[in-house]
Image 1 (spheres, rainbow, N blue to C red):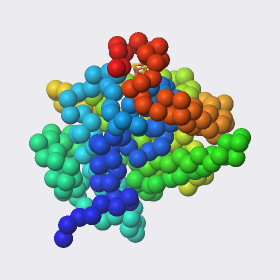
Image 2 (cartoon, rainbow, N blue to C red):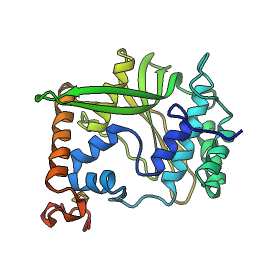
Image 3 (tube, rainbow, N blue to C red):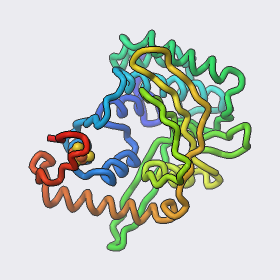
Image 4 (tube, protein in one colour):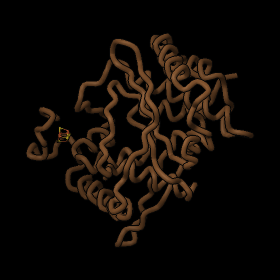
Length: 273
Ligand code: SF4
């Protein structure tokens, strides 16, 4: 029987991840917060800018790994029913076929084996849900409602601490240690706020880092809690409203991202034309 992806299915998220960004509104807000020009290219024109070189195929292999992780953890949740769980290798094989990533299957299998061997029976997560859609509305001062959505990769109890965590799988070409300084990253702040709309007891956001270098073996790491600024967290709703206002104003004043003033270019990453 042909497989028809639905919003609850990891393959749906994976396809969205590959074709123009994740369905997560948090990524869009973070992009616009960083640069409206970048936002226009990505969300109005569907172009992806790479400000830093990434390891070849890391994004695509990361997509297949996200599918393996979704099935790995969903299978451990009693009575899980939002999608049919499969063996992670079978899930990757099926997704690779649908997403035309078959050429990456062997390397993705080896990467997942590294993850599996690293955590083994000592996996620190007791999963509560995977690929969970969360949504919240932000009411602006003029009464406009802004809707923000995300898909939480993994909601789980962190066994060593007993804390309920929102876990963000980060499969990257290069893994950098998180700064110990409280982060004001809007994507992390928003994601935590969104997780709390469903699970108010969520104690923190953590990243689950996995390194996918262009050459050489992949590498797994223990999860890392993200220290978030309580001040930035407290004003996240008004910050979202402000970013949304700027997006709308820019779309009205300069509808075509290609026609925006050259003086907007930051010159930090070469030309963005
Ligand atoms: S190069 Fe600078 S101005 Fe251009 S899209 Fe990137 S961040 Fe924005």
